[in-house]
Image 1 (tube, helix red, strand yellow):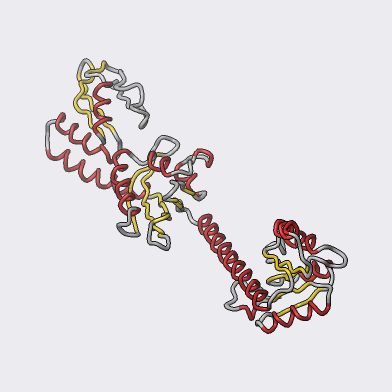
Image 2: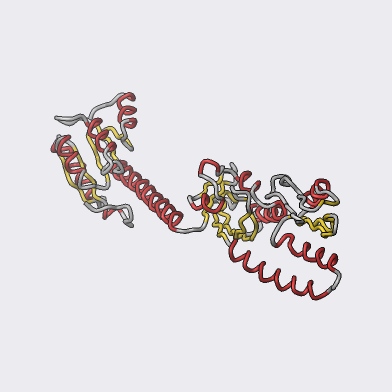
Length: 360
């Protein structure tokens, strides 16, 4: 049988007509052939099941067959993995109760007509069911392509429902965020919370602007918190999809881990700027303070510098990527430390590892 999932018209569709009444089967066949369909026939339930294995595009099935009821034939067709996608139209020559029609539809039938039926109604119903099948087949193919692409790429693929806030991530998110799947929450609030505090405002505003209708494309580079407590730098870009009224309804994008490239670039830039700073002054305290300000935020979120003296270390500089962390660091680090002492013995706000200074 020929599959009409990708066919442009009904002329390529094959319809299986199952009816034990020769005259009715002939009339149904003629109507469908005149409408441009290919038709094959079956007289019993067992013959119908056998011909269904050849994958017709649709089955017109009488509910009264001599060996197996049409309801049972439909149930078997719909429950089999090979034939479950085939639309089934129940056609009855007898006046059926609403309970019978409900039973037929709940048993898997896609539509139910009672004879006498007009030729136009029959062919219109067949065409409508085939259109639905083609749409469903195209959707399944599209979803399968998405799954294959999402599994084949190393990028994190995300799909954000703007109405509910739900975010669907592909498997690559586990690698980038260094989190097991059970810890990756399917909501935009989880995503937003993992953006570095210094980047969060800019990223949130950019997303808000594009989802409010100002453009369709968005891109940004920012840092996200990983499960191990470190940060990854990502290049993120997305596209806003709109409904038929032009309202934004979802955003789809991909997130690329550029941490290694970013670290290499910043390392080269840091070395160049540090060389300039070291050559600019002979005063070591001024030089150490300047180097600390270079370290943040390129290599760390916070830097604490002590000047070593005969009796220990004297606090010279506290530099942080954002004011709240700087204020907390100044409250927690001592103004001086003895020889061999630790500058800071615990993390600040859980943002990173403890800062240590060993003045041996």
